[in-house]
Amino acid sequence: MISRRTSLLALSAVITAAAATPVLSHPHKVGRNGQVIANGQNHPAFTMSDSGFISCDTNRLLPGYGPAWYGLETAHHGPDATGKGKSDGCYQIEGGLSPLNPASDRNPAID
Image (cartoon, rainbow, N blue to C red; front, side, top):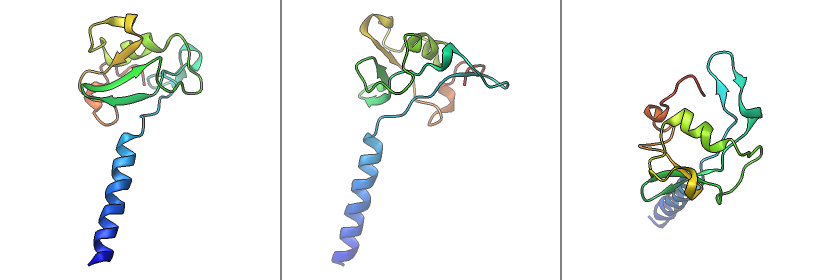
């Protein structure tokens, strides 16, 4: 019985750690032909906040981070859910984060 409880606790800890890991970014590409846009720039990592997934220029900056990140995310997922625009240095996805929620991909031309 103790072994089973230990296994369940270990599994619970792994799941919790995985859920807390920031979501990674990627270079954005144009649809079917796979052409990389904005010189392959990435956005800062997305993290889970109380109101959804958010990417801020104060988050972990991933390789290829560049100044076009906010515009790329707006073009890909739609308007910033916070309504503050770029002035706060963050972009929040309304709803969820693709591929966790494919409906958040508001512009299928940009992958």
